[in-house]
Image 1 (cartoon, rainbow, N blue to C red):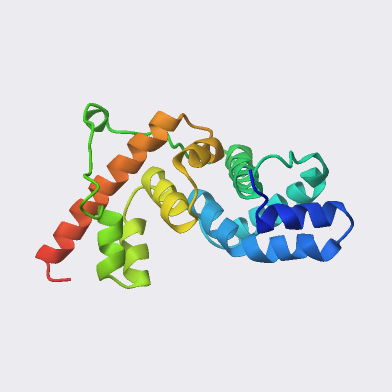
Image 2: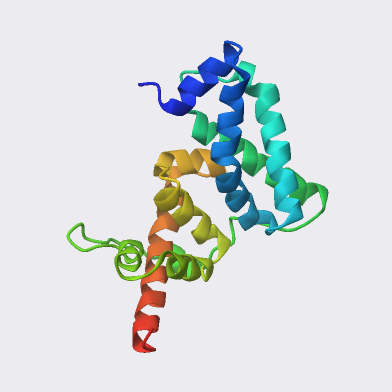
Length: 191
């Protein structure tokens, strides 16, 4: 594995360069806020969880396995911190709530046609994309955002969300189907 800029910053920090960690915090504060906000809502709670996430990262960085990628490790810590908050405050959130009918179908999108997310990107503004994705339930929106906006691979997303790769692939397919349906409805309504 070649070392990316994030991993180089981790190495620099471990060698005593304090500004390297500050760069990582600045780079990921907004993405982590957006990520945990999907679980706990946006606002002060999400901000607190972001801060707690970076405190945990700072405390654990010396134990970080430098043969691994930093970004998925950071997102796993953020996910765990958000879920710890939800458990502590007895708030319900599950990525397991799926419709049985959806489980019985397997979908395939041919490579020659842009998938629904790509169609929206090609035809809509950035805000419209977020509006479409925000209409999806969290189990689908999280996967799409991590895959298309944060550019994680499906196996990395499975690791971040502590789910099997098959579950993540299935959610990705279902999310694209739901997105396609939303796109078709918006075209019918003239949007």
